[in-house]
Image 1 (cartoon, one colour):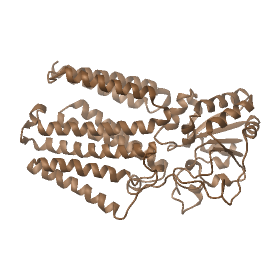
Image 2: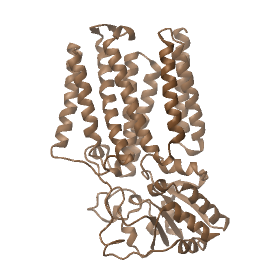
Image 3: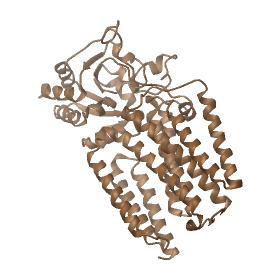
Image 4: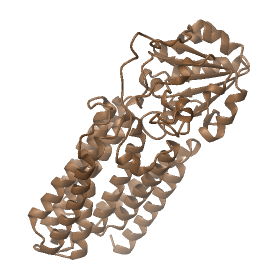
Length: 463
């Protein structure tokens, strides 16, 4: 295949990826976006395999078969609730792949057209070392994020004295080592960049608490894109450069949006996250404070006699896999003349768009799913706010308590509804480790139990 044709096909593939990002920006066009992405990837892979620089199709086919088989098994077995940790795991593989390419290019530069052994072009060394560093940070950082999301590592911020100075020192060390590599092309410098960056990835994510995990996931997505972009320059592959830049920039923009949704700066998240799981308050539900507990029958009666209901899903829905039962409950309410809508907070769940994905899986109509800015004013005119596991994003302390770690974070104003029905297993605080003042409001009724079972019981009572 000639260079002109391959460049043209890479351009077509890049356009497909841009259209994929555009489609994925809205639930209504997400399927179309996925289709564009798949078409673009097929064109990209096909074009690359047709290049004259390919030396061994056997090795490539073996890798495709092994990787494809593993991916197919994971895709079929993975639960929708485990998507955040799956995304984090995929990010780690992207980072590791960038490291592997950097190693291969460093030891076999002639195979990549970046110079002869021991005489790599300076520009290529800069690109290679940056790709190696970002890839290593992405790899270990994503492993820690996976561990936190999977529950293998505590969701609490793991901090220690001197943590920030150590991270700063390691960051400076990476750039010093890059300068050494460029000046001397010393293999020791290369492997030290790799080792220090691996340590930096661990240390950057460990202190970030569970409440900041949506930002971390999008941030690591950005890192993986920039790692791929850097390696694209090393390989002189225009498509990898464009694709990496798209992923890197979109991840960075998404991180900004998530930070804005939490009223936190990006550096505030990186330099010290907040939140982690905590035990239930002592003395049972509510400790020494009174809460109003109700049953599924009570909730069914209240909602069946309401004119409007706004459902606020959170991670509790994801854990219980309650989205299908919730949709059936909502459908029955709608058939009884009740207006039902869904309110989505930008950081609900454990990754960006987590609730949207789960509701889409349950075939909830897109026009009923509204973002915070679109629906927040409507709570004051709503009869019932049905909160299913969305703890931190509904906590009034974010507006009233300056000492709270979530103070200033925009929340869904569910407390303004006439009645708040809150489905939760216990009185334990949310992932941010903050007690929810909403539990103790006069217009709140707590529905203790598994979210899926509660929705099913409400459904039976409505029938």
